[in-house]
Image (cartoon, rainbow, N blue to C red; front, side, top):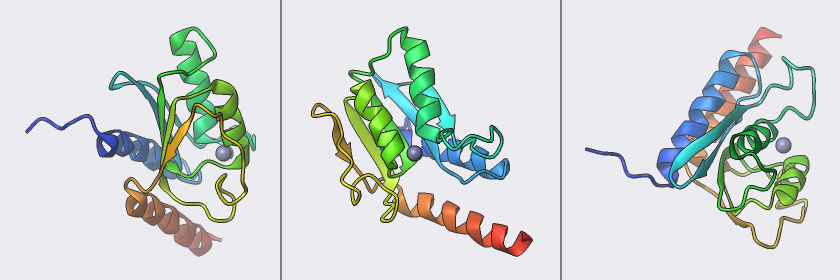
Length: 149
Ligand SMILES: [Zn+2]
């Protein structure tokens, strides 16, 4: 069976990125940016490796997508990210004018929704795609990290 290019399909790609982050000992958040059903950018959290609090998955993916497109605006692009974006990433996404954001799990404490971070008026946001997979990966990571410390 050929897999359809739907939200689940692309969120699985973002989850693969999150798994890569997990393997590197990074908080497991992953993202991909899609245009015309094609993944043009991938990213995962690299805050430990780069020693940089701004190295969130979304930030990596935004930069990679702009490089791919040869322009800074991400119109007609959709971001798939395993965790609801934080304020910083929502701010960066605002500047990118991205068309759509699809996230997996909610982040009630640090996510942009409860913090009322403004998105670009052209940006649609949807959530809950493979939310359980994304949050299970996070839980597994933090349990393991506590065990190691
Ligand atoms: Zn962020």
